[in-house]
Image (tube, chains in turn yellow, brown):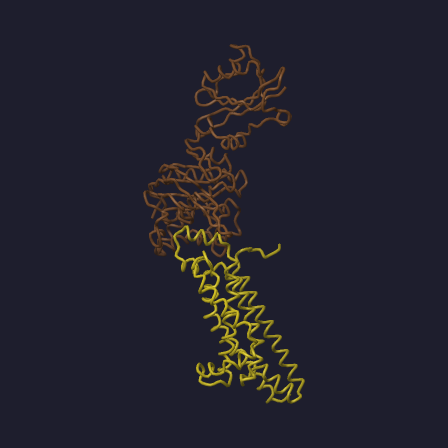
Length: 224
Length: 353
């Protein structure tokens, strides 16, 4: 394999990591509060705002039902507004983030809902404000499943990032398509796939390791 | 902060009614026309079966539920009318412990006890000394850095108690706090509650479905059935002279004085014709609890008595006895008159031929 190809692979790997990392961070920054709000704003709950909850739920569902490749193309004007351009790796972060936010929000929502309602009651009985309950009870208690949820989100983002080649997003997926498919270089395709497999494995393992670290519910391991 | 004597606060329920919305649009009444005064500094038990409304009663004291009508006053403050910051202030004066402990799995023992202090905005240094005091009080010194998953049920409830006491409340609410514990652990937790009540002088209101819990620590008791308080008073008085059938059925469970199966199976509600025996409950209270009354009955009236079951118990420091006996139905009314004249209580349970 030529040195040129190796540097191409390294650059593409870096681009994928860059896109995925930034969009995962941004997705969490926006998705976490959204997810917490979705989990706590139904009627009779902590922040009880049933109407806003319904509307946000619909928006999240709508965003999640648009296939990613269509989302990428559909929001090109918005991408240009945010990133100044609609082409390139940095521009690709915009659709990736837009896709990540509702996904992460739902994952966080599920994680928060799993927290025993008795804990919320105990905190209310202590005189905690809703915000204190969220910060000191719900998020810390949901942290193990939030961690696993974010791991899942990062893995999905690695998959999504392969599609942003359509708007010049580059990265591993794009390299695989351009060289492996369009230039008939199956070895490049194979290497790209292997790198992606390794990346996903790594992310999954690290995610599970962190989740186990923050999980104090069963100190001697589950199922023992 | 130290364990300085904090005065308890009284709790007053004034014709409290609580109805819940049903999904079909109707109402279901959980508590109706309940009036009860819980004395400051006393340990009071509300006993009832599941669904009787006792949990709702308790949850109205710290505003987890609001009464539909009537008032709940804690230290004179109307809890049901309090909102926002006012309600949160009242809640800091009312600690609560739970059947399933409700500890944060993500925090250590010390972290859990610190939580209400963090919520109240107490400075970190103060939290540290206060938590150390509390851990000491509940005897968990070697477990302070353990997580709840590493503790036994009794230890978890001790953490719950320490946490409930953290903000130096005037009232402690106990929601079936010992129902998930084995009998031995239950005793140690009850003893801890008794000690806390004695040392800190705070009011304890507990709900339970176990008469034994009431007998062991409560000075006052209220019996709730179908959302109504059917009987209330000093524990000793209620135990020795129960008025309501619900109270009696709770008591028959706790005193361990129940009819043997071979009698129960053939007992009749009304007296059959011919020779029959009357089965009655005789309760010895107060000064007569240890008197040999049945021997005297036989001596004075010549009535022979079969003892079917019996026990002598203590409530607080006062003993009371409970006997189930059978005797000739023809002479039973004389026997009852004689026993009641000597300050004992009798109750006819049925007949066997």
